[in-house]
Image (tube, rainbow, N blue to C red; front, top):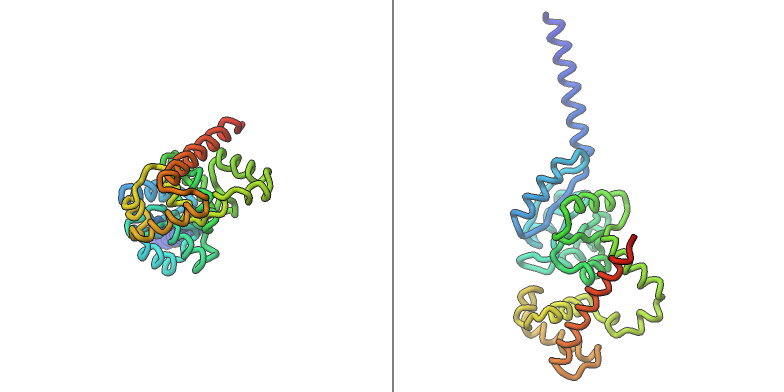
Length: 250
């Protein structure tokens, strides 16, 4: 009986070692989002996967940067809209301080504009919150294997832009705007006031006013109303381009 008991204990010990090893091989995901329910839903989904686990969660910029430094995750899933800061700025800091840690952006903002901004800022992928949660898993896995993830329609749009060549793109004044100027223009195109833009981007009203003046100068517009009209038309055009590319996708 004693022999059987020792053998059982040995088998049990080996199984524990195997279980621990499996847990260690899971890729570790850091979630950064200021909505607890969003974090809860995504974390539950990730933790049910055999190859993924949530190693930490953060709701603001300071927590996010501390978690990245302390936890050294395999990937960060980052919302662009955080309660105390602009997610794009957080993305740039992570990319500068931890260049080997990839970032997947998960956001409510239109992919037609913000995916390009995010990729330029150092993200490896972009998923809109309106997409099925399964897409988040697909994006995480693709990025972890060295790929880039955006929707098929966005991929088609970027390929079309690349095919047109740099000369036609560089001739457009819109392409000379900085990422922040594009954000302001995008919000203007959705009829946001200066005060609302300041709140969304965590900027002062004076700073937003300065950006509006820069936009008028770069786009050769002579009034505030002309700027708003341009912004609305540009935003609608971006949506149409993305829709057209989606219709052309196989």
